Image (cartoon, rainbow, N blue to C red; front, side, top):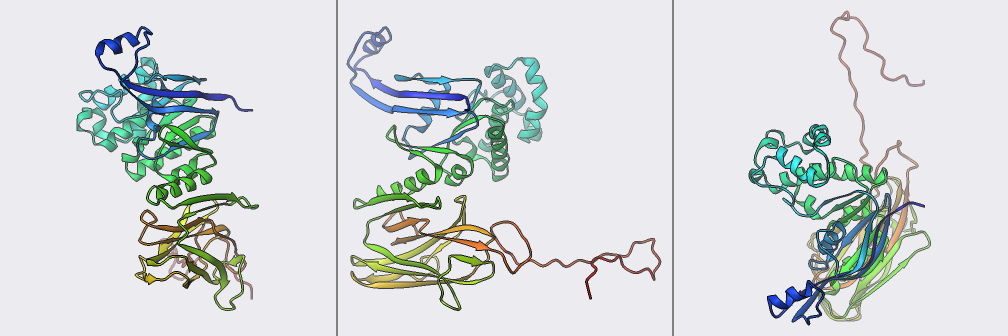
Length: 430
């Protein structure tokens, strides 16, 4: 069993407002003084994290995510509960935290790494690798005040990850960086995870959560609303976002026997009565599609209320939860208007199966506009699951079949005689 690296037990943080400075001063010495107002940024949060596990904290702004990270790193003291960390800890919470704007990047490396407890001799050894990873070039010896936010993120991440810690904590600081450095940073994070580093990070990118994390905690108003696998919590969170805009709303989750999680949410004013995948030529139902096969996705929608506008959208995902493709009838300019209760609408989507071998799912959404934030009538994650096999084409990898063809030619060597034949590239059988 892996060692417990992080133990958070019943942690809470209360920010209190008192009637006077004297009253606040008395609380420092344990004198009980009634606060004029109390705000609990975090309340009764508990979880454990083992070595090599990655945990994401998600939730709306003000949910308590950043406060919880500050409590774990020790920059803020908890009002209740306890936090235990076994081993070294490294964190990136805010841009510029621990940096001096008048110092150069190089000087700030010595300054920040010194605050992390590294001796000067060790920092001297690490400077070349930090400079190389940050890729700031001439700016490495320029004052931090001339840095962009992305450049500051590069420097902060390079310093914080110069030595692999037992626990790495990252707030959304990497979101300000360019896509190249984000990819480079997450590659380092993945390697740390493989080597046993525990990771806690705050992000609004559900794709990053699904790709990196073993577990997700959804915070709402400072408390744990849901704690579980990435697909379960992220799908619930997406449904919860729409719930805030709809008073009449329900969320239902269940996991199928083959492991796919089905999350259904919405007002129920329009519902999906049928969703079938068929062969576009024969009309037969398809559970296992062939690469290149002509397919048709058929949806039968029933209306329970009068609806001024109806949009159907699809999201196609692979087994890991990554979106392969998606569109809706808003973008295709096929909006249906002034529909009446009791009507049925049939949607046919025809497409060639250009997917790679694997397992996929369609998630349909019945909404009133281009997103589910205004009116979410029904959204079902992983409503239809199917497999794809390759039986007719050359071997390829990935989630997309491009039907690519090689064309190969070669020049005659410059020192070869003009009559020399071209090198043999392929010998076929008669």
